[in-house]
Image (cartoon, rainbow, N blue to C red):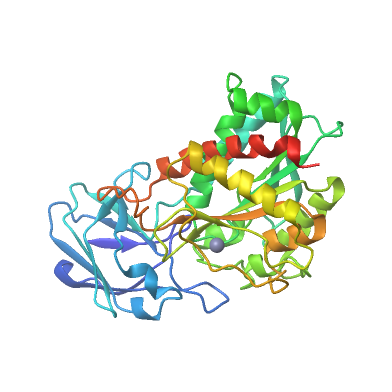
Length: 379
Ligand SMILES: [Zn+2]
């Protein structure tokens, strides 16, 4: 048996792989911060062998609640991901699997590959070259020099609402990448009424990958300098978190009327959103907009629910370093964080796949419909 993680987004430490029935592994952690959760590794030459992979430091993970009622994701082709039997005893995370093929990958959640992201950008560029109002703009570079890409949908010369959807600030939350694929593909679909409605009545800015360095490195939470980008929005440090600095500047140029920030939650097995009730300038108007968005999304997509989620912030106590809370305060606009599970949606369990790339994409598609339902009320 051969184990490696030397590829896009890979992360694991191999302690002892001499006995397939008890392979000792460890979470590696982010390159420049204490966060530790994400793993993604590949196993070769174990077809037909009953393997147990033991992640021995699972208890020390940043979100140990993420390991309960959780199944590790596995794939033979990097495209179709399924869950494998996983045990947690409060210390070790044990993966039990007899691979059917010579090469198999295991991951914390289905990884969103960089080449897939780049392919999506190429489709947008091609669509723009065919005369559709879609394009990709580089607004700056990440700390390690990767492009910070913003997809722009709609003619920017008009005085219409500006919608921003950003995702994947936390690199281990790869569900955000799949979600954005659903969003982008829908915007690319010429025959889609929701996409047409948005192109006619708004400019939609999409940032599918806020943290390209963290994604490439296989970090869970932070960028190459160890910064949690979703704590950088109030005073972005250009030298340590240029990713936020550049996107924030681009937002400033045209303003923001609706903002969504897409994430995954390690522990909570539901799809939910959090609003801006704790920002100092919160108003009844924002509360009504939040209600309208949430009620629409709940109606059109049964995965989304409002009964479970984070506790509400007390009035005035919001942490304005978070993107959606900063934006709500700065622009006085509807701004939400959207969370998907790593585990599954406990209201609609799928023991074989759990929360899956396809469900992320579908939710992305539905979210655009909820956005459209709010457009006329934004200004
Ligand atoms: Zn997150």
